[in-house]
Length: 74
Image 1 (cartoon, one colour):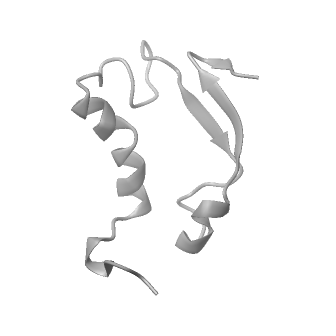
Image 2 (cartoon, rainbow, N blue to C red; image 1 turned 120 degrees about the horizontal axis):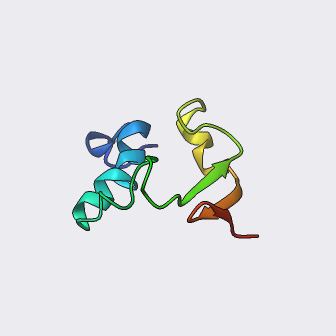
């Protein structure tokens, strides 16, 4: 069952919402929000590509590694 089916967004839209669009809202898009030379390299390595799995499986994707400023956190 899908609640609010008319409010659904694509996986691509969801990824933008938590990356470059969120950075824009904070007026920080020149520092964060996308992978570009000169920006902070904060990102995660996932066990699967959220664009390549069924929507029901996105919640099962594991974070394998986290990087802050280009360095692994552990």
